[in-house]
Every structure is written in C-alpha cells, then in structure tokens.
Amino acid sequence: MEASQWTGNGAARLQYIRMDRSARDALRLLRSPGVEALVVIDGDRPTDGAIIGIVTEREIFRAMAARGLEALDNLVWMLAKEDFTSVDVGMSRADRLKQFCAHKTDHLAVTDGFVLTEVQSIWNCVDEMSAGGGPAEAGA
Image 1 (cartoon, rainbow, N blue to C red):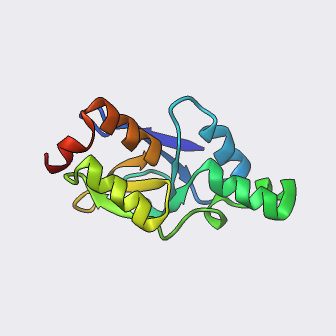
Image 2 (image 1 turned 135 degrees about the vertical axis):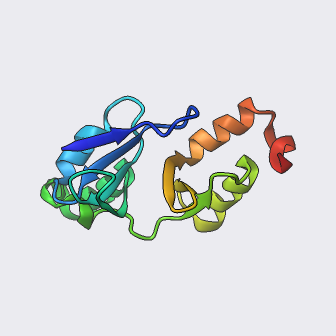
Image 3 (image 1 turned 120 degrees about the horizontal axis):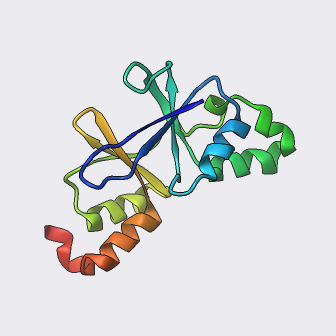
C-alpha cells in the first residue's frame, strides 16, 4: 500500500502511496504518528513512480464534506493536490513561511534540484522558526 523513505539530515520521512489506492487507505496512513502528507505516485516504487500530487487529511475531509463517506472509496489520485507549491531546500524558514502565505497552502514540497526531499507543513515551519530564534535567522 505504501512506501516510505528517509531523506537524511533529520528531514521528515517521505510517505508515498500509489495512485490506485483508495482515499480510505490514504486516511489510514495519514493517521499514523508523524505522517502529515502523502506523496501520490504513479508506479510501484517511489524511485520508479512519477509524482502525481500530494494528499493530506484536509483534501480527504473536503471530499467527505462535499460527497459524504462515499468519498473514502475514491481513488487517492482524484483527491490529490496536483498544483502543490515547491521551494528549494536552501530557502530560509522565514521565506518558506512567506510562500505558505503567498500561495495560501498548508504544505510545501521541499526540493533539492528535481529531488523531493520533504513535504513540510506550515506548523512545522512555525515550530522550527520558534526553536531557531525566529525571524532573525531569515538571512541564514
């Protein structure tokens, strides 16, 4: 059903789900500790699959609010955010926070070139800023 990959240097573990799985399967994975988003892929393994989008509990909740519990039987790719915002791994936390606000999103794809390294939530970014000294580190 899913695959995961450690991205190194203390980054969050990426969680993957194949596009042919149900929203119910995705919700089950999202309820696991430390999992805030799933990368939806077209393929059997993350290294072989193309990224289709990102799905969070928010997308599943919106689908359930619009269509009822039947939405849980939809394929996960139908609920995935295809137009997610990505930022470079070297971008400061303060600049990332600006991107969250500018794009009105709660998750960013963090990339190193063409490699996805992390899916970061706005709340993790805020926590990191608080722990790292706040806006003063913006230029770091």
